[in-house]
Image (cartoon, rainbow, N blue to C red; front, side):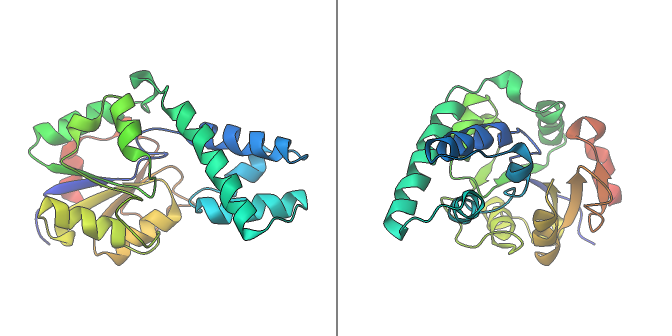
Amino acid sequence: MPEIKACLFDLDGVIVDTAVYHYRAWKRLANELGFDFTEEENEKLKGISRVRSLELILSWGGVQKSEAEQEELAGRKNRWYVEMISRMKPEEVLPGAKEFLEAVKGAGLKTALGSASKNSGLILERTGLKPLFDAIVDGNTVTASKPDPQVFLKGAEALGVEPAACVVFEDALAGVEAAKAGGMKVVGIGSPRVLKEADLVVRGLYELRPEQLYDL
């Protein structure tokens, strides 16, 4: 087993939590279309693309739209979402995330972001975390979504580190599966019941120290 040389982080649910902004934007769209959208329904959209999310929401509301109309609606939702995350502040970083990133860098490990979000650069800028990442691989540079390992393999490549020397930090089952498919170690953030394929599961980055990664 190669020595651990790099850490690859998912963004949402690991470093920040933007689910509330997605929820508000989708809810506003649903309300404009004449129906409501609940937090329970929002949970079902985690890790799903914007296009597929819209299809599900329209089906829940019993609303039919043409492809062109759906494109316009998805764009409108995204504009509202971007407006909201443009106002994010450093204090919205999840507990322990910044400290763990700093500790990892201090231990000489490389860092990359591996996220499906097309707005990850903006979020990292607004929260002051951008300098803590050596590479950013996101929805602007990948074509396949998790559980395909593309985003993490590209992250390892950008850092010049072989996949087996990388640890991935993920809060979603599809992300854990993607990391495993890429031949990487995985730390799950969340429930051990859900993320049982991970090598280690913690409630948040505040529970971790860099030296624990060498025992995975």
